[in-house]
Image 1: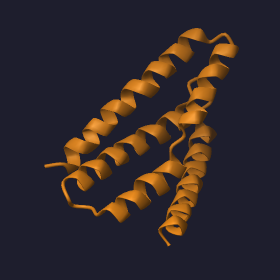
Image 2: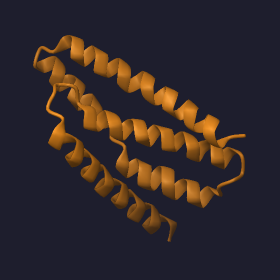
Image 3: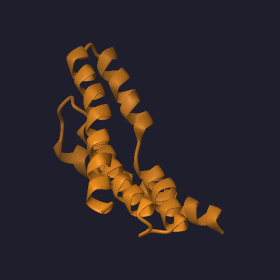
Image 4: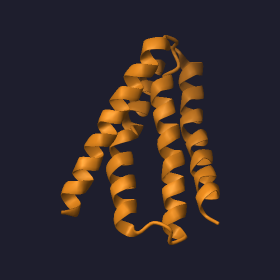
Length: 121
């Protein structure tokens, strides 16, 4: 049963990612891949909140598993971010690719830490 629920939550996360991605791309037309960046920032902040809540005993393991492995696993998209970095470099937008790489690593780290700080007391 847990397997099916994780699959369902993963599907919901993927649909949510599609909606956010499509919505952002409708009004953002610059080189920086903002939609993927926003998705990963939201996902890492939520993962930090969930991890802090689980560590403090506020959330049980099953709820943590469904949300983080299921929903956030379907919602976040690290592979797309890496592909976008390579695409930027291939288009000779080296500075943007380097900035996006750094931002994709550093900002989510800060988001996870902020999420822990919000939920773990």
